[in-house]
Length: 119
Image 1: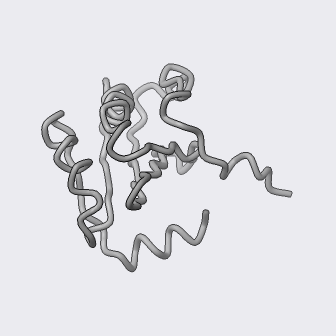
Image 2 (image 1 turned 135 degrees about the vertical axis):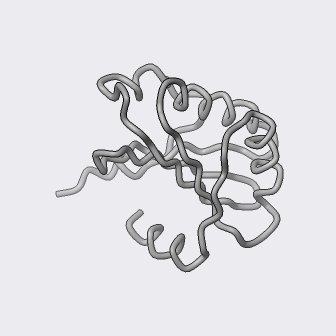
């Protein structure tokens, strides 16, 4: 039986980056970003194929916290940020990542939709 809390999001204000990074030394990660008009959902997928609970970010109020979260994850490891290419709702987030030196890769809407079905 799957634990439903695994898929429940947590607000970026309540995320403890140190706890997420525990036992993850030198592991690369990809952060998939689901972009909505008012919220972003960030899901970290580690190189060992494990994922963490989705992190919810209110737009635009919490973009700074989202960038801080990503910078904390990126410290000492390879981090890729993947965002769906369509729409303009993610432009502010994409720009904030660029300003922070975080590389953002665009993902096709089809690939994004298929992966979202898992959640």
